[in-house]
Structures are given as structure tokens and as C-alpha cells.
Image (tube, rainbow, N blue to C red; front, side):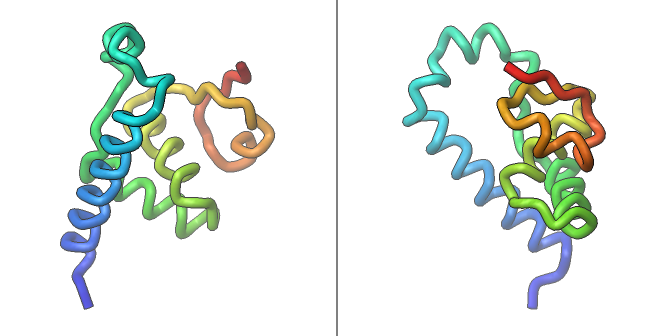
Length: 98
């Protein structure tokens, strides 16, 4: 059994790898967008991973939803989404519907 710190580290590495590989194949994340939003693109660090775990424990949400909200909470951002109703009861961040 892995301890909490080691599990968090492994989760962060896995998540960062998945996000990086997804960003390289996702057409909406082109170089111009990355440049325009560079101040709002954050790595998955230990704080985000810890907050994601808390959100998943207390709200039983899907991992990717909890990861998005945790990143927004840790860095003081809102969340732009097509599914505001999905997040409004538990996210505790500013939600903007596009």
C-alpha cells in the first residue's frame, strides 16, 4: 500500500502526462491560445492534487471535474463551462457559461 504523499506524487505525474499528451493532440490548444492564456494555464502540482482528492472525497465527482475545479480554486480562477448546472452546487468557484 502506498502512503498518501507517494500516491499524490504518482497521481500528479500521471495527470500531468495525460494533460500533456492530450494538449499535443487537441486542436483547440494551439500555440496562439497557449500564448494568450499563459497566465491561466497551470501545472498539476501537489496543492492541486491534494484539493482534487478532497473534492472527490466530499462530493463524489468524476476525477476530471474535480481536477478542473481544484485547479480553479487553488489558483483563484473561475471556470468557463457549458455545464454550469453540473458545477453550481459543489464547485464554489465563479462559473461562466459559454
